Length: 132
Image (cartoon, rainbow, N blue to C red; front, side, top):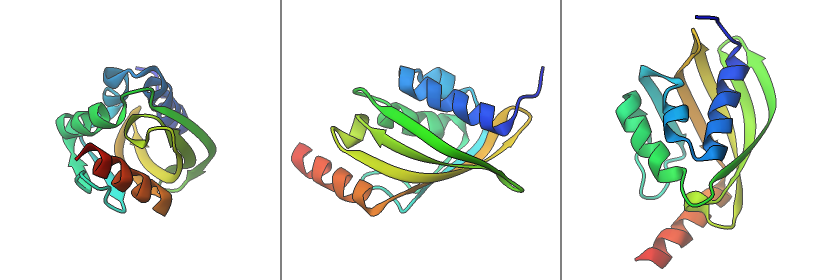
């Protein structure tokens, strides 16, 4: 298997998200990968461990026209960092920002941390309140 850059692995996940391709996203994670949400999003766990749990998160978030606009990729000693503006899915018509960091090894994401801004929390709380 040809090794690709950490940035390429992350971009492949973003492209799969924009296609609504859950399998394409989850396949880029190691079997024992960890996905962390900071801060914890309303109605979601703060940590998803392993592909099955990450699939649960991805299936929930990548729905109803979910889109990611990723930019500002920076390679660091510990992986790759980037900014994202997301919309659709659980965020509805709102556009919210996040800062992200992933550790990638041998073409797979070992861990990813998504730092949502405070507006994302407000948007999700409002959306969940409307559904109740």
